[in-house]
Image 1 (cartoon, one colour):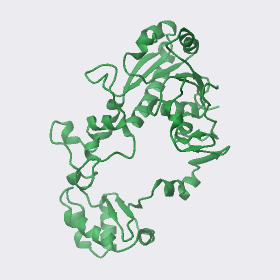
Image 2 (cartoon, rainbow, N blue to C red; image 1 turned 90 degrees about the vertical axis):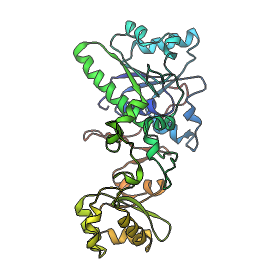
Image 3 (tube, rainbow, N blue to C red; image 1 turned 120 degrees about the vertical axis):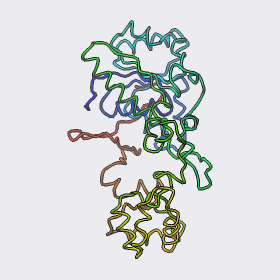
Image 4 (cartoon, rainbow, N blue to C red; image 1 turned 60 degrees about the vertical axis):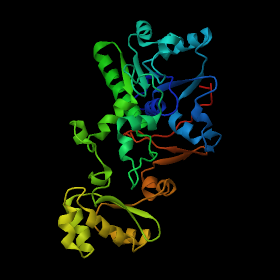
Length: 359
């Protein structure tokens, strides 16, 4: 049944942040009605496909019902009202003002259903100079500063591999909705939650952007401890063109590795400030370039150092760790990424994603 069994959700969102958030609710038993335009969520058409559905769409929309509505018609609006009247949560991801034009802004909805928790997810929030600016994940990352340190060796920003702004917004929205549901038990009323991808991403910068947060200089990867300026938090190429990482800067890891490599004299340099470790980085680059990736995996096997080979997604999803923790599950010919939120008393199994317009 799940922790959220009995909670009714109306989800009007598309693509990533909202669907990811309501997926986590559906995985815990919430009754999620995914309200789609007549053409469907665009994610339905995103390759690759498996068992007749987009892998992307399935992994963000399993366990939900699909209701296809034209909200510009009286019939479509009446059908949405029927869902809202019974709902605990409404999630929407339109640009600010769209829900009001359709006749479903928070004030109107709350007048009919005062207990509803109404969650608006947008790029920059419901108010402000950027509220109506069109943006997906990368543009939000660009304006929030995070793309500036997602850069290559020459300092040029590169397209991010993970949609951090989208995912931060979905996780923040989930937390906010659950808080509002708990608060409703005390007050009897829901609330309107304004989730901006931009706002949700900013706290993720606290560990790297301290100086800028105080009004000082912006971080630069070459001199920042977590972005490439530290030898023991860095990426190294191996003899066969693979990559490995050192992912822990603690003094014990520095001592363990440099002693094993016969260079204890470099230990003080490994504990120096980021940006002052160039000689050590050069030494490690030359050292790791002398053996293959597999040779280094074997070499590090019995050493207490925060080390890892860089795997591609195929290697990662085929790894023993994912199999042992059942993080990739096959059901009825379709593959699902298992929820990261799991409870000891739950034996989670994936439910299918709906076909368009089918509950």
